[in-house]
Structures are given as C-alpha cells and as structure tokens.
Amino acid sequence: MTTPPSTLPASNPLLTARSLVLLQLLSRILTFTLNQSLLRLASPSVFGTAAIQFDLVCSSILFLSREGIRNALLRKSDVEVEPKSQAQIHALSIAPLQLGMVVAPLITGLYLWSSSQSTTSQQGFHLSLILYVASALIELSIEPCYIQVHRSSPPKINVRVQAEGGMAIVKAIVTVTSLVGLGEGRALISFALGQVAGAIWLAVLYIKEFDWNVKSLVSAQKVAGQPRFDADTLSLAVANTGQSLIKHVLTEADRLAVARISPLDDQGGYAVAMNYGSLIARIVFQPFEESLLLYYSNSLSSAATLPLFTFTIRLSLYLSTIIQAFVPPLFPAISSLLLPRQYRDTSASSILSLYLKLYIPCLSLNGVAEAFHTASADPGEVKRQVRWMVASSGVFAGTLFVLTHLPPHYISTNGGSYQLLTPNTEECLVLASCAAMVIRIVYALCHAKRCFLLRKPNLRWLSLLPSVKIMSWACLVRVVLGLLAASGRWERGWKEWAELIGVGGLMGLATLGFIAQAEVGHMKDLRKVMKAEKSE
Image 1 (cartoon, rainbow, N blue to C red):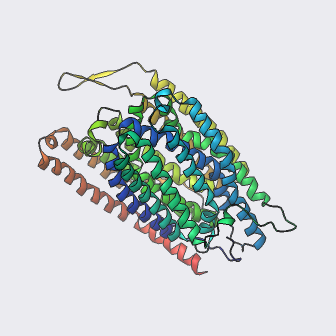
Image 2 (spheres, helix red, strand yellow):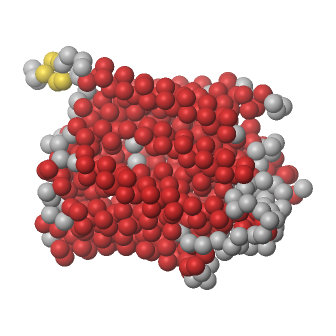
Image 3 (cartoon, rainbow, N blue to C red):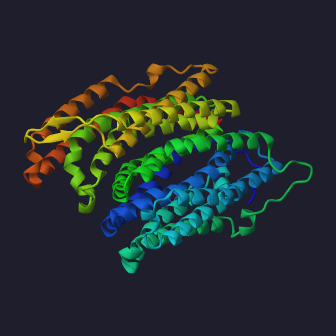
C-alpha cells in the first residue's frame, strides 16, 4: 500500500474539480432517471425510512469514524515523504474501520431504541438496517486505498471517478431491479440491497487498483524505533474527530429532527425535497469543495491561495444571486414535473422550494469557506471552531423553538381562500438549519481573515462581493420573470408554459455570460499565478 518517497506537488484545483464534477454529473443524470422510477414505485413511508433514517444511520457511522482522520491525513506538506512517515500514514488510515466497529453498534442501538413501533414494524426493517450498517463498514474498510489515491503524485482521480461513479449507478440499478422483482412489500430490503451492492462495487474498484492487497486494509507494518502514529497528525486527527461529532449533528440536524417529529409520509416528502435540492450540491459543491481542500492542504503558502479563495467565495455568491432571481418565479411551473402524484399531498413542494432558495446558497458558501478552514486550522483553531459550532447549535435550537411556536397567520388570496404564512414543521427545520449555518460561515470567514493577516496582500472584504452590474441584472430578471409568472399564462397550456421556461432559459444564459465576462480577468490572473508556480 505504501509508495516510494516522492515530492507531493499541489494538484490543480480546476482540473481536479472538473474531473469530480464530470463524475457527479454523469452518475447523477443516470441515477436521477432511476430515482424517478424509485419515487413512483416506493411509498412515501418507505422512501422516508430509507432516505432519511437508514441513510442517516449510515452517514453517521461514516462521518464520525473517518472524517477527522481523513482530513488530517490529507494535510500534506511540500517536503518529501519518508518511508517511516508512509508507514505511520498507513497505520492511521486503518483506524477508521477500527473506530467504525465501535461506533456502528452504538449508533444502531441508539437508533433502534429511539424508533417508533410504526417504523420498526415495517416488513424487512431489521434485515435492511443490518445491510445498511454493513455497507458503511465496507466503505470504511477501503479508507487506506482512498487516502493513498489522494496522496499519490499526482492524485489518481480517475480511480475515484470510476469507483464512486459506478457506485451510484450500481446502487440505483440494483435498487430499482430489486423493487420490481421483490415488490412493494419488500421495498426496504430493495433499498438495502442497492446500498450494499454500491459499497461492494466501491471496495472492489479500490482494492483492484492496489493489486488486491486485502491484508493491507486491516494491518500495518511497524517500523522499529518509531511510534505507530505521527504525534502531530494524530493530535490533529483527534481534534478533527471531536469536532466532527458537533459538525455532523449540525449538518444533519434537520434530518435528525424530522426523523423524530414527523410522520413517515412527511419524512418521505422531506426526503424527496432533499433528493432534488441536494442534486446541485452533489454535482458541483461536493467535488469543488474537495478539490479546494486538496489544493489548500498542499499549497497553503502559495501566492494563488488568496485569489483562489476570493474567487470561489464570489462564485458562491453569484450562485446565490442566480437562485434568488430564477427559482421563486419559475418553481411553481416546474414543481409538478419533479414531484410524483403521491407526494403532492406531503410537504415536499414547500420544502423543496425553501431548500433551493435558502439552504443551497448557505450550503455553497459554507462549504467553500470551511474547505479553507479545514486545510489551514491547527488543533487550537479547531477547538475554537468547536465553540462556534456549539453556539450555532444553540441558534438552531432557538430558531426552531421560536418558529414552531409562532401563532398561525393567514393571507387572503385572489379567490377568497386563505393561505397559511406560518411555516410548517419541516420548513421550520430548514430555516433553523440555515440560521445555524450562517454562524459557521461567519466564523470560517473570520478565520480566513486572521490567516491572511500574516500574508501580503491582505484579505479585503470588498473583494469577496459580486459585481454590482450582475446584481442589478439579477434584480431585473427577478422582476421580469415574476411578472410573467404572476400573469398565470403558463397555466393555460403547454405553449404558454414553454414560453415562460424559454424566457427563463434565455435570461439564464445571458446571466452566465455576464458573470463570465465579469470574472474572466480574475480567472486569467489566477491561472497565470498557478502556471508560474508549477513551472518553478
């Protein structure tokens, strides 16, 4: 599993992001199509159990077992890696599986203890839960391969593209096939079989890359005369792992709450909304954030770090601007295409609208800002972040309490009926999550400001803001599309509907063109700095 000593250059974040975005785009297009079949084959209660509860159990095991250690091991230096360091790195990369063997029973036991009778009485519930937990342990077992892929020089992104892209596709195909073959009565088992099949595909692809060296996944050679783990890396991993618990609770607070307080059918509606709402997050945000993390970890002292940071923050704010201009007026026209009939009586439509308008912009900005923090924070700064996360959890709880105790308010519509303005329980969860995320964003940006104080040039807040011309254009787009949507013409027939969508599409292309024009100079300067450093 180890490789000879080598210089570990910084990977190009633009090329890495392009590969990972392509991975997510291709796999998500196929899985999106397959998921449409899932939504129509599975009932809201089954989909809610699988996509909210089982997926939460699985992600909790993975996140708490590997996230802190993974981030610590990806913090590479610019010096050559010695053989003894390679042995220590490999030894620590095995720890997530060992930690997962402890975490998995605890989380599973807590979940079973807190689950309602209506949930656990579903056919195939316990077998499905066991399969989900097994899939998480399979993923943890190949963590040494994942670390080695990203620490290679250059990183073997193609391996990850094949493994994770195939995993998403295999998971969707097996789930749909099993659901058709086993019937709706065993729908939970179908979801679980798809989960395990995807994990097995992932493991096989990674192990194959390293010549089927299965033994290295569970054991590490000890070099005489040195500790098993590097002290600095272990300290950072421990600090990150402690932070991961709070971070995970905050990240998954909405799913934790909806799993406890909402009926199974509403959980299914919430899961559908999250499935659509997170599509852009998984296609763009996740690979982009991981690419930034890899670059910052390798080249924190690079001259390109500051312009890259400001550029990515602006891109995130441009995305927020686009969302606020296009989603509110166009969502009513496209929601009927996205939601199957059986989900229209749930909270799916209102949750999806709110998720797109507020949660996605916050998620984007938080991910970009925290990627820099993860790569640059020492153990002391990680502890400081934990205190801010505790504060953000208080904001989440306080916001949720206030919103859920608001008296109902209604507004009269044109037809004489009344529309409820007070958010429902699921909407309150999304709003509270956004409020908590704002606290994390503020801390991450303040951390970046402190870090760049030691550098020249310094970080200027104004450099993070989007172009005023783009903001003005977005306001105009919002007004024009809002007037077209409010006229109700799009409800008369498919031609009028296509007219609204067509105008929105043309304005969208124009908006992207204006953004590219505003940022082309910054992109050229950034590429010039990166090329100059690469040639040195």
